[in-house]
Image (cartoon, rainbow over all chains, first blue to last red):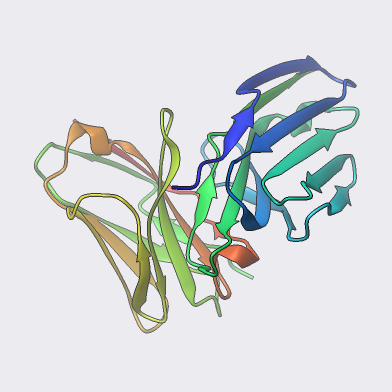
Amino acid sequence: TQLLEQSPQFLSIQEGENLTVYCNSSSVFSSLQWYRQEPGEGPVLLVTVVTGGEVKKLKRLTFQFGDARKDSSLHITAAQPGDTGLYLCAGADSGGSNYKLTFGKGTLLTVNP
Amino acid sequence: KAGVTQTPRYLIKTRGQQVTLSCSPISGHRSVSWYQQTPGQGLQFLFEYFSETQRNKGNFPGRFSGRQFSNSRSEMNVSTLELGDSALYLCASSLLGAGYGYTFGSGTRLTVV
């Protein structure tokens, strides 16, 4: 069974601060995705990373996939209240199955104005 | 284009009853997946359908079932409801499968009393 551990579980920061969220596993994934979920809504896909060592930037968000494709990080620069939400990482099976994602339990981020 | 539509948004049922949830994927998406989200367990995979065929099933009891129609719309059914089935049920559609990223619906909030 593949598991994804996210840390920290909760994060409360002030507007303008930087933060990093981590997603770790002992399993190898063929790709890793990050989602953000707001209360009462479904998760929204932010990025997919597929190559070990890959770094992707999306405005103030930087995503990195570990060289061994077992871990990932999300870094937010100068956080804003609009970044508040539940951040979820999810891995696709490396065994060739494209049928499901394994999700971490999420990091609940609160950015205070 | 229209997103993923889930109906109903909210549902209250009594223990022992059964319930059917509906999901209309993005037009052209043939893969539909279902997840259960609870505060304690996070997102847990229920099943995935592609072109009316179930390709994968999670570790849920047989009370949980689903199907997909020729127009890619999907339904999931839970029979003999238990209090522990109270959760947010999320439907996600994808062009080809999980590894390509999901578009989630807003979910159905099921409360069992």
